Image (cartoon, rainbow, N blue to C red):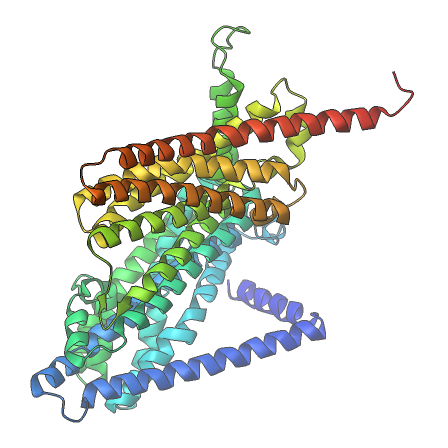
Length: 566
């Protein structure tokens, strides 16, 4: 095993030595940036922990005591963040390293046992995780030791505790891959990594924007009260809390307490790590490499055993078949829903940030809050519809000529796309309705109104975006964001703006009628405008876009035949 590890290290070193000079220079720059980042984390952690230990001039004694006792909670938060980052890294790295690594065929052909190959791949997963140890966990804990004046014996203990954070996430991430390989085929490995990157980027963006904005201007007492509500890191059954207590007792020179907390964390981590190692090792060659193919064969057998219906005997409509195909395509493409979720998170954070300050949120109440909730719901649904609907026709890619060779007309194709995208736009709106209604509207009535609003505008937004993308599709694009041309994107913005104006006019008429008192003409007209506008937005664009596709297909066929061909 030692010779195998040495061979892997030599192979890695040769790959670095053969890289172009530009790539080597970029790697050196990234390494220097990593060192600078680690230094900044060390300095920041030392300043924060020193401020918590000594307090500020004029701080009440009870508040100073609360801050002095918060070091374990803050340390636990550092370890918790490190565990979460290591888990995401382990999940993505294990999927790529153990499932689609380029050197797997070479290793399996070499005179090596499966255990040796698996061990070296597991070591690669641990090496990828250790990046967060040296970028975040270790500098922060070293800064804590420097702030509290810990002895020299604390620093080896801090290194040991930081390295301990890689075992539990590695166990959870590799075990989760046993489920992932049953659902995700080999050619979607890069999509999985891209989806994880989008989700991690959305989480980082939300934390970096909402956290400082929420805590800005808060008094020390408010900060202490907010820390008391952070139960996840401070839970006694959390491994992050065990590691934090081990670090705190090591900094105080309490050897017995340190050994107790460290033993608890090490036992839990290493036991789960050993179980994961044994479980995944058994599935690595037979189960891991072949379970996807076996699962596909079993699925094909189930499909072949289904009775074939006679033509015309209960055949499903082509519109419904295309809608089901569209839902499956979006659900299986991880880049689609990851980018859609990222868009929703970014838009939601951008709308919430202006209302947050001094540890509170300045949301509007009453009717103003309800209108703000309706506007927020419309913007979120419009962004989600644009993300999923603009590339609906372009999602066919190279199979578009095959689809056009079927008896399905252009209207049926566009209607199938609309029916497939509309539920994926409306359902998230229904999920967001309680949040927007209770936070902005502040009542159950607001929740019901926002849910009804999502049901009303969701199909129309999906229809507008699918139709706009159908006019300017890009079948050669692999990136979901490039499956429609620039004119299609601009057209979708104009259609969404016009639809928003119609909805705003209808809502204003309903509200103006209620203000006027007793006059039922304006509310009735406003409600009719909302219903007619939504029905038109849902029904008219697919018909027009379908006719456009039929006309363009006829022009293409006639031009392909050319003059003189019969």
